[in-house]
Length: 469
Ligand SMILES: Nc1ncnc2c1ncn2[C@@H]1O[C@H](COP(=O)(O)OP(=O)(O)OP(=O)(O)O)[C@@H](O)[C@H]1O
Image 1: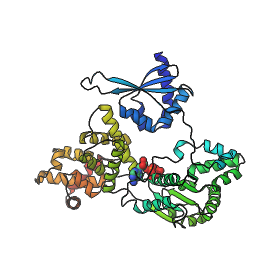
Image 2: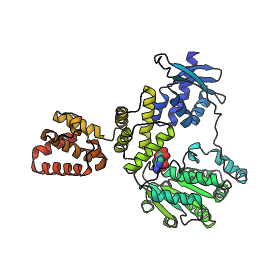
Image 3: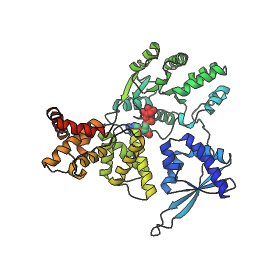
Image 4: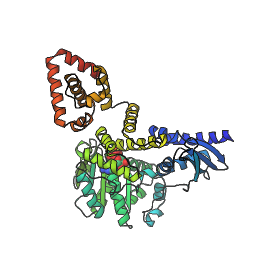
């Protein structure tokens, strides 16, 4: 029996591993212990209530897929949750929770019934996977506004309240990886869908659009494909850079675009670069994009990062001290997805280790993530290496002391932080005992001067730099 449950679970894990990023697999699936299999009910043990909720919230369709493969369509999952038993921490209690979800299939819920009649469309909609359809959790309410996204967000909101009517048609949102393009355009789609039930809102990635088109050619259903898209009221098409160099797909998109635009239908697009850099996209298509509004998303500034962290924590019902929030906001300035990833890992770590989220845990988590991704240098690493080199402590570097033997290493550490991390001067100052950004500028200038004047200073800096190659 035990063998059977282990075999079934490893079959499930096979499917899960193929469907989730490695980091998520490690965090959320490796800690699971398969307990038993009674008929078609598989019981798995998870380390906490939070863990269980997270699985149900984020991975339910993957779990479903895994059960289908591991047990069959009637496979069911039951969670055994380890709960903290007050004084008896060493003797965990378990609570069994059957999962209430039934097998999921992607069900389009805002498609007008006529559209469903065509065989192509039914087949096509069936093949829409959950992740390429509108996701109701992307809303304007949980989209934090800041200087980095104000124009795009406000234009998006105008389009969401008056689709096809504003001058923002098409609306093109562009920006780098993980800056919130999909969230914003999905929020527009969701708002329209919720306020105008009769409108057919379609979210599709350009990749999916291309595949559907190629499939339509193969199965000789191009007419159906065309008709299907012509009936859309609001077309949200993600990642149009994917259409580069795909001439035939561009051609059909051009016709659909023209038809929708002329009929007063709203078109919303995203791209990872500005239209002028979309090499390999036909000029006539590019010139269409210019009819409406193009707005960019920038990397969020410090205040926006703080607001995003606060919002995410609030949504999870988790409380974290302000000093931890500040630390995170000052330490991660690449993109919002990374910021979110750190928060999730932090919550998972706290849940697994049954401890509060404090500064220590935040630092530890950040260190692990950075080591895992093996590409970024953290300011903690810079400080540790410099302190070690000069035989002082990291606390010395952060202290207010103006002793000569501390000022020099501190200036070098600030210089290296600027060189080797992506942090802004303000954030570097924060990590050195809350110093002002002008102090950091002064330190950088001093080190630059010293390196020109004194060969031994240059040597020291070069030697320290070599640690981060
Ligand atoms: N302003 C914001 N407020 C709240 N959450 C945000 C904001 N911007 C981005 N996010 C969150 O960050 C994550 C990444 O955003 P999203 O997937 O929309 O980025 P993207 O620009 O489409 O990335 P990619 O280029 O990789 O497709 C999402 O979980 C999203 O909810």
